[in-house]
Length: 311
Ligand SMILES: [Mn+2]
Image (cartoon, rainbow, N blue to C red):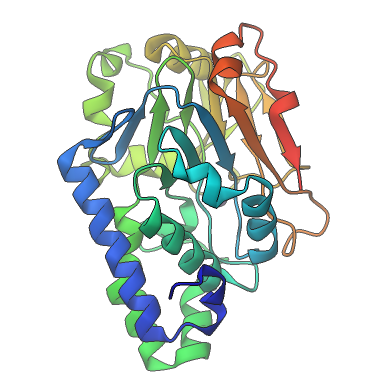
């Protein structure tokens, strides 16, 4: 398994070994708290100092080609050799595209070499067993490919891996990163100990559902509205302002909605990144790459557009 590009040739046993190794790394990092000089974790909540450089990638949905293009563009092997350079994925690695398993195995291969500065957040597609929905192909793909062993691989290896993924990341003084959106928090007492509240998603189903499923919408009259998705909610600008204010951050970075690479909501305070093309021919993939100096120089109103790159 030395050549990460050989993921298309992996046997099921090799894939299982790799994914289970990463699940152990995730669970160790969650327990230990200390990850590196600039990275800490507290359960499901990751907390970083501003890294020297930051790359963020949005939904991939089984698009191995777009993933490879982005990894080549950032020259990831050199980039990740510097531990203060961070690479963060926003979730939704699987479903819709042709190469869900290959995307996952490649990412796990990168994580096995660079465990302290490459991070995969959890998407709603990585929590089907918690919040079921219709467009879920991954277990069926595995069954078609590997028969009964594929079903067992999903239940015994993939589900624990998905449960090991962190759901929210804060880069101090700069941004919050989630897959879907901000949870609907109306009692500001929550923010007195929000890091603790965000550290254990197992005991707060609603919080996890909203982080994985919520979307920003442009309304100001109420804090939130019901979502057409059937799971999660729409959050308005009042909630974005509250979260940014109480966490002392400037920006929300999230995925979850197909768009032309990126879009802004809430006066540029919510950046949506989308990084998939093959299953979404009408949309464009992109990623964010920004340096520490550039992050520190951003002032309100935020203008981060120039750091979003097409592929
Ligand atoms: Mn999603």
